[in-house]
Length: 139
Image (cartoon, rainbow, N blue to C red; front, side, top):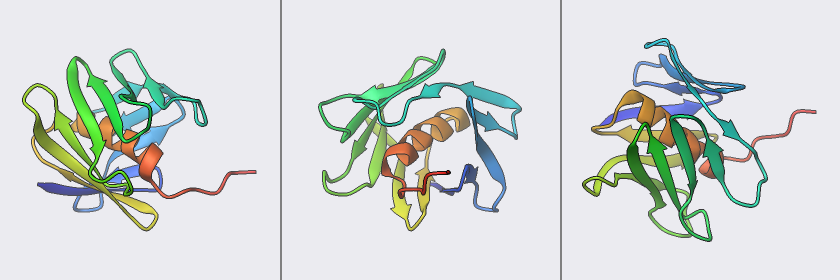
């Protein structure tokens, strides 16, 4: 598994190179020149991230389970323990674990297996929105 980390507004690979960046309209993938456009409304009653090709939402009453759709590929982002913020990301097609996220201080570590870059960036960013450390509000 590859080891990546969300630090600030960037997803960094093992060498420290940014492989995804948060923009006001979604995620920018500098290596591919691609963009994942979506909208997230913080503080909404239910967790949702909506875009034309990428989306995620709560799969239950709580945020312990999220369902993500990445250009038709579906994933389940579930907490490994209801009282911890660590998640495993499962491909619904074969129920195989394809990634895992773990908060470490202000960062979110991402262990990625067989998963397309865009899917890994989007699903781990959804985990960051819910499970990352609280950030001070800009005033």
